[in-house]
Length: 372
Image 1: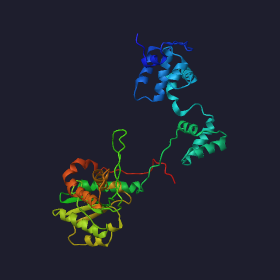
Image 2: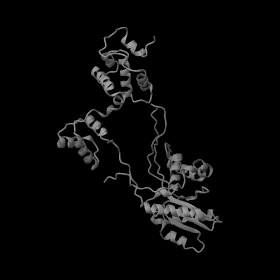
Image 3: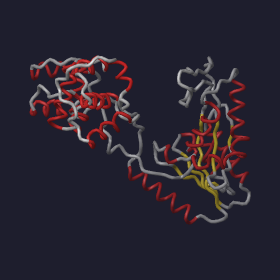
Image 4: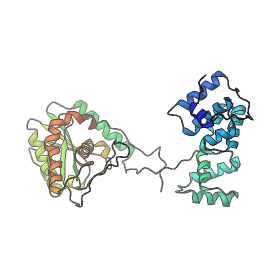
């Protein structure tokens, strides 16, 4: 009969040991459960190792030799066997890395949790000091980590929260936009507009590579940038833009002029953009004061770039032009940016239109524990 664990048979050789634990204590169903755990490639290594040890004990192997094979001590193997026999596989497979019984009383743990909830500790040093001074217990770094994990704490970095308008203002704009798109006439158009300033800097970005290949991308030494003041029609993906030396009221008026020129048969053109000062300055007011002006401006709520789809177009631009790409000169970089607007958008917009949509939602910080 073939041994179930031939590798372990080779390890043991032909030597036979007297087992302190009686073999064949597992039922067929119990063996099957453990064998599935051992052979599962998704199983946690530590848990699979415990299942392996219990199976070997059931085969009649000796605690000392199993411990030697698994690089453990034989008391650990006996402890696993005892836990399994008394409490079953669920207990043995779930007590895991979070440690054993805490030395702190339940009320002390509750007090520690309350104390932690009131602050943001960046290391265990402060926590261990508090435990020592408050409860008289000394914890090692690893012991403190296990305690915190058992109490439901984890080590995380806070998310950077953008400043946003109130939920009411966001909802009001979304309602206004939906009403506009429902009632818009055939002789009207809607554009979203904004400015972007891609910098002449290499932008490394994540991607899938062969393990060990150690990818790299050369960096640039320049700090120049390209200024783009652009607009986008989500229906036609028309994307007029100007390339000013400085984004200001003059470039805003030039952009509005270009939008009008691209829509000679539209009676009314709604342009939605943010509250930048140059979007409300004297140059724009003079443009709007013309008797034949066909532009109607709609202001976004303050601090709401997520309500402007053109921001998503900028993200596509970076994906296609700047991420993981090196340009030897600033001129080559600028030409690549302009080529995206002049050629890529008109010819490839259908491939990324789903990334640039008006699927708006209200953003709040209600479910976030805000620090500071």
